[in-house]
Length: 382
Image 1 (cartoon, helix red, strand yellow):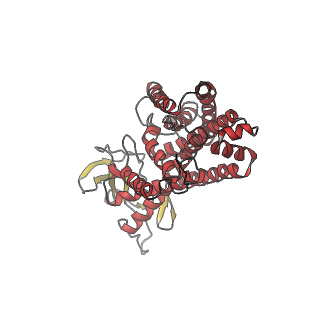
Image 2 (cartoon, rainbow, N blue to C red):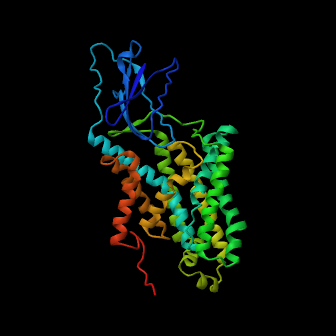
Image 3 (cartoon, rainbow, N blue to C red):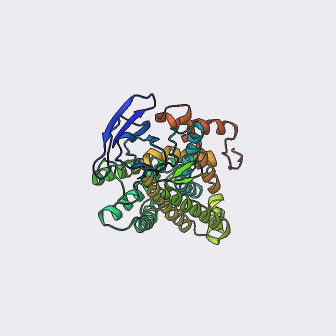
């Protein structure tokens, strides 16, 4: 089978001929949106594309690989109506971008919620939060690929490891800095140094290549209305929604959640009322590490495992937290969905390489009219 790949301008980006097992690869020159065409005249006799879509359009990110799957099957019987092969319409593309934006928004919402909780209880802008995301993805890769565990079990254990890593950071490092009365500006600068250190530790042990999990790398899409969605994406969406709802309800309905909100509102008054502020902050770091690790596992399923994947999405996570309202759990979710949709839909008008600009423009516009964020509260200063 012959496959042709072209960029947005229609210029050929490469061709490939599949091997006997149906696998093929094309190295493109850089990130962007590409159209992949399967030459149906080169298919074996009696074989056809079962969904009638021999052309697919997809986005390739910097340093990442994308998988393309054409479902093949027996050709229609003589006399039956052949499947129509039409290029995706603009409406179909918009729907696909909307779903991709919501999916991406849910993934970064997990990390944004953890970052928002840490900021709410400590007031710390943690630039090392992206490395917690990477830690989850690398931990899952090690357990799945190197140790041979099933992906679902590796993901669960990676989240547990992420929770432990968050607890360990506060127990050994951030708690010690708090006891020394280190200022927030100093802690923020330290978090930048910690992020750099962890990033290059990951690079040293993992390398600079983008790798894939051993399972669920490529899945045929199932038709959901006009969209073809991989089942793994639907599972990730369901897990993210359940986790986000569970954490949000825990913050509003449980005693620990109320204590967390009390520490976030007024740490001194919370301590005077008998709440252990250090214990609550440590719990928040544990939850934040688990949420970031889960976000990293899902992000890796979406775009592969790379040592700087957390750093690459950190700006969008910060934008989501700021947009939703600093320190607010539900605001982190709303801000993440807005950022995800703005990032993907902006590719309708601007090059894919600049799509993050769309999210930042939305952030600037909303903050100009609502400085406290979408769900943030107005506060008097001075």
